Image (cartoon, rainbow, N blue to C red; front, top):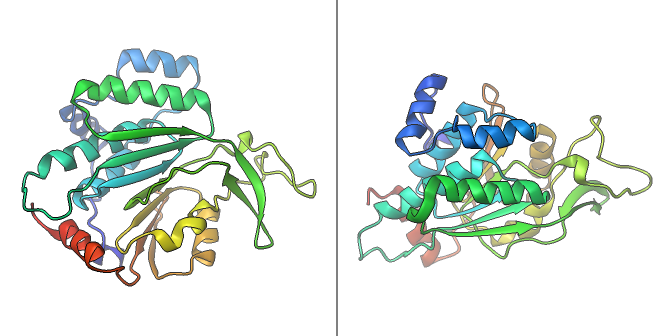
Length: 261
């Protein structure tokens, strides 16, 4: 079971309890100003349990660097969790000195701009994390003889937490052999993580929201040792990189994840 490697939040909690939880973090998921914009743009309401699990997995497992594919309310939650993780580290003897950097990759300019405004709105001047926003087109490619999708530009980062909830497949316009994923019959098939897999350190966590076909594609093509579990109740796929440590720095980081600092 993946719980041996990843600390998970409590399984049962009501929507009202989740809303109150985020209110205690100064995140109002029903903020009238934000709702007005999102209703006008026909943006989906957030799935509360998904946000709750996302926040707590980052918090409980002391993540320090995040790469997110896609953006939205999840970005606000991730930014807040990283900020709180940073404020908890007050031990100057800690040899890690994490950067607490956050990289958001989006293939839609509107969502990227809207997400940036939401993060600023809910974190204001209190947010000292290094947050980088990236817009990139996403194309259909041939990956080792299989159709897949790939962003044209990737952030130069090495995260210990990856959240995969993008891209929007309908924005992937190109075709190969007349095949296109811009149809409800198909789905995006992100391959970018396979390009950086050998750079990821032991202990890296990957969370995929839905996208079961993409989770299967990654499982079939990853080369290193990943622990995997599907949580059907939440339609979430969770991966933990349990490969060999890269050395002393990796060992210190693993120790930090388990510390009570």
